[in-house]
Amino acid sequence: MSVNRRCFAAACALLAGCGVGDAPSAPEGTSTTAPVEVPAPQLDDATYLYRLGLMRGHLFVGNALFEHGETMAAGTHSKHPTDELYAPMATEFAARGSAGFAAQLDAHAAAVAAGDEDEVAQRYTELLATIADNEAVVDVSPRLAAEVIVRLVAEAAEEYAIGIVDGKPANAHEYQDAYGFTQVAIQWARRA
Image (cartoon, rainbow, N blue to C red; front, side, top):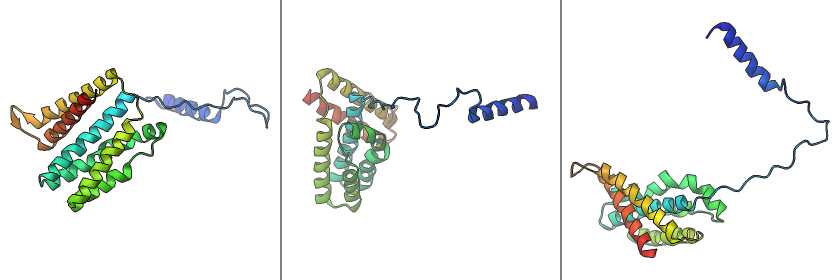
């Protein structure tokens, strides 16, 4: 780009920032705009329930691994709901009148890290109940349930494809994720 074009582009940017070419402003003390209404967030029930299902899947497989003495793998899976899924859902929880359950997820992950079997069992049970409460705010039709199931199974298929390559185990972690998501899809199918 030539120097003249760069200067012209810079001048245009500066003028745009200064308000050159804008309509004259209203006299002081008057308003030219109506109050701005902020639209309610568009809530996608299928995505919301799917994400909760992914959380359930991670927790399910983490709990199963913990019960079988695989505490390192259990610890990784118990952190995934917070690390991978929770933050983008804050708006979803608030819009549905929920405070969410971040503290419960953290307490569960801490119990898994500490290896306290009774505490893990208690925290896991509490988390499942809280997730169920958050799911219950959605009116689930058979069609919506089917959409959640399809999404969970599709995610499981992607994870299985990483976990098993050429018929051989390639990535235990992704295979475990897939197993958890499949189990949650089965739970959804039984409810529907």
